[in-house]
Length: 269
Image 1 (cartoon, rainbow, N blue to C red):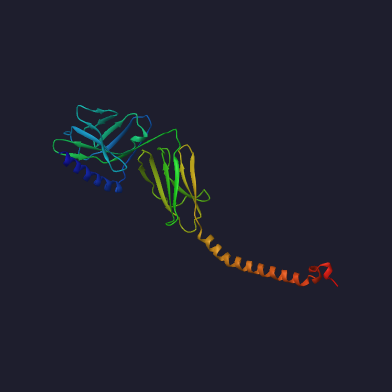
Image 2 (tube, rainbow, N blue to C red):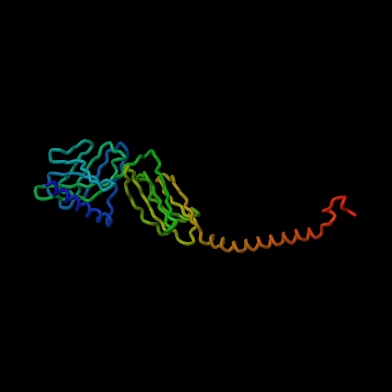
């Protein structure tokens, strides 16, 4: 029975991974110390279901069991479960939430007849007193830039891109991706391909209060390289002209110098 359940979980995770690529999991935000409620949509919930278990998928892919609830047990450590009748959602309440609680969650409800998995949800626990950290990574080979915002709560926008003047936003904004790292930090990222003619771009995230985090990215200009290639022969010609002129001036000075300046007084007539 345990082996069959493990096989079921493996197949379910593969299915849910493909499903998330098409329909991203909803994000539930919470703050440190609060009680956060997660819901997992379950198809075909009937009144005959009496058991519910919740699972968490680690960034490494490891699946861990968080809690198991029956009709007589609705609380387990910091977790409490709820499966309302005539509802499509199973609920998990996490008390005294910590950043390490961030991650992907899903429920599995069970009756005598079968197991029914629920769709995953993402829990993002953030610190409202701290500022998020923005990091920018650039690939010179491909000309792409990755902007990450780590630790931003629901009041922070996704990473946005703007031109070097800081006023005009790029018309085609890449869709931001979300993830949770091994420490439970919630990350929003955006990848931009720098086009020819764009010298500088800024990655910008804005808080609902108006606070802005901005990081500038500068691109090596092909035009600047062409200018350098154009100036290099000119510099060589100028150097040659300078050396030649200096040599002629030194030769003329030598020709005009009296011979007596190079003799001792005893050698003079």
